[in-house]
Amino acid sequence: MNLLSCTIAFCALIVISLGQELRDDVPVWPYPTVYKDNKNGGRLLVSHNKIEWLLFSSKGKLINIKDYPVVYEATKRYSDIIFNNELTETFNETKSSGLKVNFVFQDDAQPARPVLIPTDTSLEREAYELIVGDDYAVRIYAKQQWGMLKAMESLSQLVKFDHELENFYIEHVPVLITDKPRFSWRGLMIDTARHFLPLPTIKAIVDGMSYDKLNVLHIHLIDAQSIPIVVSKYPELGEKARWTKKFFYSNEDLQEIIEYCYMRGISVMPEFDLPGHAYSWGFAYPDARSTCNDLEGYFNENNYPIQPANNITYEIIDALVTEMSGVFKHEYMHLGGDELVLECWQNDPTVQNFVKNQTQIKTMQDLWGYFQVKLEKIYRRNNKKLICWQELLTFLKTDLYKVPKDSIVQVWKLVSDLKYVIEDQQYLAIMSAGYYLDKQKPDPTVPDRWLYMDTWEDMYNIEPLANISKSAHSRLLGIEACQWGEQVDQSVITERIWIRLSGVAERAWSSETVNDVEKARKRIISHRCDVFAKRGLVTTPVRPDFCPYVAYRQFTRR
Image (cartoon, rainbow, N blue to C red; front, side, top):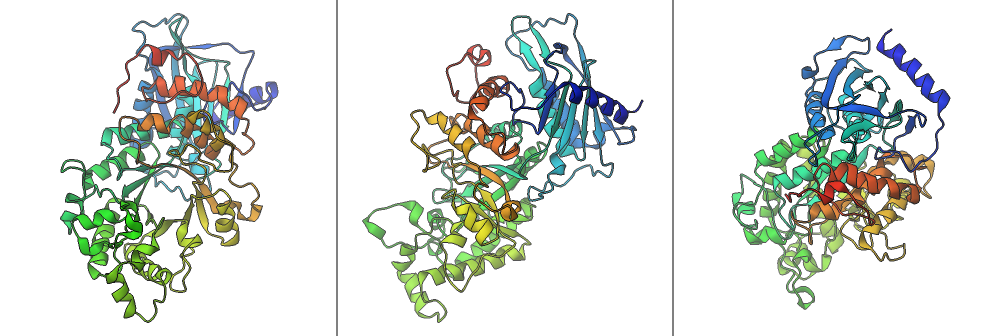
């Protein structure tokens, strides 16, 4: 009997005996598309550190797993994750056995290093089927290595540890999971300009993202406070805009982050926010920053935009985008575009003298459009498509510039703004409105929360496509939570992000019908303990509970 026929017989047994209803005891997060187990089945006792990984073609031919580095490296990683337990040095191996995991490619035409494409809305690249038999046989079916990664994460969450009996186990076998994401873009934005985040901290965040099956890390690399990168042609740009000489990301550092993310199925999206938030540009090049001329009588570095009147501005931007395009190979790059204070340009003598000699520029909105035209040309020369914050579509009003139709608009202000972007204007979009992790009230339309961490429920309850016509649904690529960096650094960032991000992750992965907060609450408490705490990532609890992995271990802050 070949692997496929075994699967059909096995699935038939489960489908006949079990129904499908939204449950509060499913141990996998995010909630899978289909989850079936045998409530009358027993507990499968799993031997400590005994797991075999084999890879097969769709026709049952054994393949050298080392030829597929994403899966191969993940098997080593998950062998450690599954059996990681620092609370005991003894394990009860009575009546237990090792797991035998067989991966099967459903599509044999697989490259060794497949491309990550979070804008691919087919969703099949991350789809998988996972079957755990009562005979210790585990079968994972997927078209691509990315689906196999997601299946391994689900398998790792199925394996629990009984602290009294001191053994690993999987409950209610056999288990069948058929799963794929709802949205292709499931992201987290972090801000490395307001507080520098060391590589170990970023890697810890990436690990946590992989536990929640997220697939895009958006790095807001530069802002008004610092520019922690290297621009070789203009080295002083970064050297004079760092917090200290040693706190910056070399190109090699960025490539290390990209590779670390890649091996966990996560794309890296860099953002170079302009024309606003450009105060730090003036540390090395004062002529590249607008003066604001003491706007409103107080100092706020976030108000200072780039200087659009001087050629040096565009020369530096060109050098930055060109160099970073050699590091970040993705077809898209985020150019920012948010929170531009036009009054700064209005009060800048250099800008006003420039405008007097420009017949096409009548207003500051026109000047903004003029800048965007020149900025877009730089990105296009480097073969980049654009992602922008929503203001370029909802606030910029000029005949000189229109957001290109192949761009992606990131919606962040109001949940209701999404309808205008994807239905009225018919742009592709990423939804971040209501998913701001730095806010005490992420969604301004809901009542205040007494407890800060309970805002995960508000995020969980947002249905981004509510009140939007079905014809526009496909233009929403997905969801991205944002953790701005003004009040977080490496000492607190993971606990500020989690466990609320897990609520966003389930909204991005699972069906819109998975929307019962009461049932999700029990699961998210378990998820925080059995996954994040067990694996050593510092997170915040949502309810009074006892988690042994927190109580009996020393956490290492990164």
